[in-house]
Length: 183
Image (cartoon, rainbow, N blue to C red):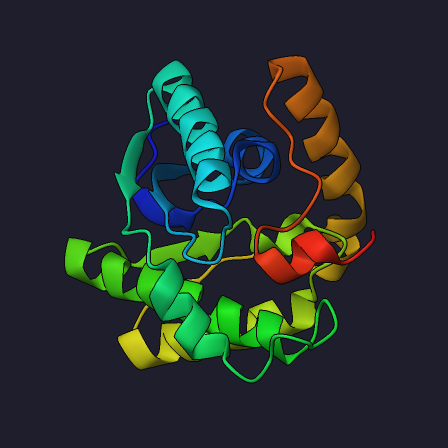
């Protein structure tokens, strides 16, 4: 089957995004977008990027690498450093990443976009969908994401896929504040 729809997929890491790329978005021609200004420290950012590059080379998927804008991210979340995980700090982070993804899709003439952020059981799918839809409306695009009934199965499948592919798997979302919080 020829894939006629192109989708820009913001990927945070190979473990979360790899499974979705192979299973959930089968009907799309994918372009992956690695934009993760929240990831700390920079060595962690590089580890995640290396794994995504490896995955894209293996699967022959185009990869666009956004700027590492950790200082900008820190400015955006200022005042929310002590927020609980899945609180307002995360909402601001989702907003920043999804807006950049929508802007990139618009620049590339890609009508559909999505994110791997919603796979994690630690992230609020309702919030991500709301922000994604707002960005879709703002940029005249379509936000594609799974629903809550699909989410419960995605995380264990993504983790198993990650183990099979021998991907580096981090134990925190990415920012310094999620690193400090016990899971």
